[in-house]
Length: 84
Image: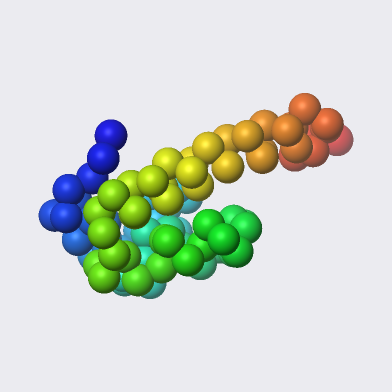
């Protein structure tokens, strides 16, 4: 689902992170905590998004969602995240 330029502008203005509902800095797609969990090459496309192309931001959000899903799923498969 590609975003329009208006969708990217609205995402940049929202005060909450769409992934974890923590406060985020205006102008970024994710909060600092979520961005820090991503690899360096994925972070750049999710920072200062009002200046970027809507397609670039859309692709970066999709890649970040896939990364979080696969990364944390693999951690859980090896017993991480369980309270003992």
